[in-house]
Image (cartoon, rainbow, N blue to C red; front, side, top):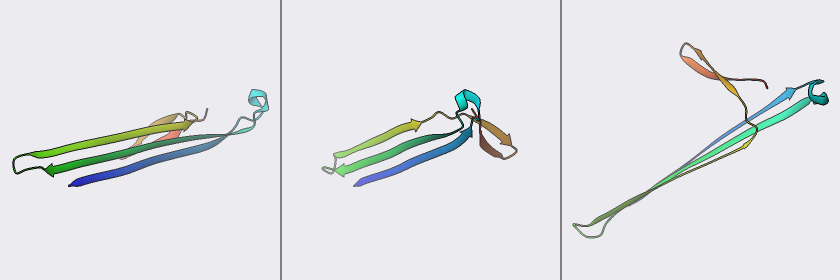
Length: 88
């Protein structure tokens, strides 16, 4: 018997910050962040004979993050917990 599973998790965030006349008239700047995580698993079960059984499993986790580092502040409001993005 062979069992397998795969679950991707993709999070993307973008934000425009207007610096105005600061930083040499930088104006509006666009920032992005992309995080991709992939989870994979597999298992093999086999009966070679009545007394000999063979099994094995495999786990794969790959993560990749690109873009700008964005800061967050966690706010707790009774039962809700949410993230608030902090301006640079």
